[in-house]
Length: 478
Image (cartoon, rainbow, N blue to C red; front, side, top):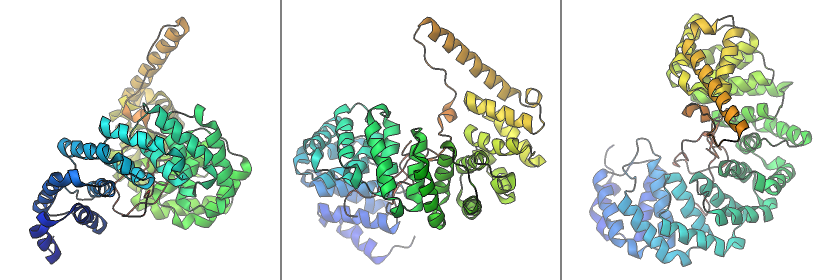
């Protein structure tokens, strides 16, 4: 990239910048999607380190946000903070924590979540204590942002913080904006607190029904994804209202939002009838170029579950893309594609079928028992003999069955046993989409589905969890 004059000037004046100017410089690069020149960045980081003891809360929040945004750029900037820098930031947070406003606290914790880095213990204690000391001062959007960050960072041991945020969200649930509802549902799922959050979840369903006319396509996808993750059963009237709103907002759906939406609807038992089914299949064709294997698998499986015929579920162009990206397919995605062919008893063309068989055998050890049995059934329904043609998949299924039987036997005797587990791919959230995944692992985005909010265009993805949703800026955009 040619050096523009302002960059050249900055390289010679970095040593004169104050904390606010340094953080704004980094944010400007992030907004512009420009990686700072390495020499200038190194000088800037050194200057930040020497002046860290003078950073105020606003500058700390802006610095972490800038680092998170730059880390998500392609090609990535060399801005992953090292332990020394993180320790210095944590120390300054601990020193200045009483000066943090709710907005700056939310922005700071959110930035840590996007970095995928937990605050060091002293900083975490300070941030947590500061939030709890003024929890009633957190509006619904701020509480939702912090709640998401706590879930994304897996701070399940911060029981007081989790409980306090949940109670505040319950108290302010009527003020939740559409984007935040899916965000909160993903967080409840990720934190594993469904039983304790029943009142909050009921409040979200009521609030969503009251505000359905304000939902955008991505908001609906995140909400439906959250319902499915938590196995909620909203009233049929509410689901019909959401479908009507989808009809109005369908042009705004991205591939990840579509994946979350149809995956969630399928889990909730929604069937596609009339023009909405055709609209969604047209949306799938329009967003196909940006679909990932996870999203293709989720969409194919969901469309089949909701009763759409194969020619609407897997178009010729999708079949070609499935073949081209087969090395990237994981076990749940393979199961999704196979279910579409198996349910319709239609065999893929030879090249695609051979590729699916080879990939299934290659990743057989990562199938969950449910996915393995579904894949084997699908192969059988299209006229194959899996026992002869798919020995690695059959072996993996049998091993999982044996492990499950052993677990059940031990459980019956009262002996403590670990639940049998398949490989990492078996942990993938079947749907909604991404996140379903992840989620929301989370929300995900996910997914990502990444559908529960709108970030700056340079925002990094929130993590590796399918369908993990992303919150918007907790404060005014920096």
